[in-house]
Length: 182
Image (cartoon, rainbow, N blue to C red):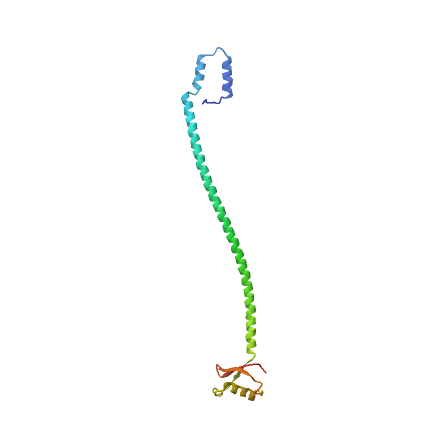
């Protein structure tokens, strides 16, 4: 390999002027020869160039491997981020559905509670409580005793009163369930 060296404009003009002078000195020739690189110097430069080339190539290969690892990790992280976003969206949708269902169920519960209260109140319409009756005054026939009591106290005919059941409640009272109210 030949080495190219850079020559400044001053050196180029000097060499041209020297080449144009035929009466050139040998000492000038010796000076120009000593500035030329030797074969040993050229060999050393070539070895350094090849060594730096292989080191540079190895460094570039390592850098390329590192970039591939970074790209692989980046791809993995992007896919994980997309999966997380999908899960977050699914959770948000499920939460909204749950809130709608909860609102519906709360309204439904309020409706059913009021309906149940209404039914219980209707069932109580045919109930009658009788207070201040002495215990064991009914003897063995409680329904007959209550029918007679209603006929004597409230002056209803005995045939109009149909009692489903009757029992003694807490305290001194009777709880009577009428089949239909007169």
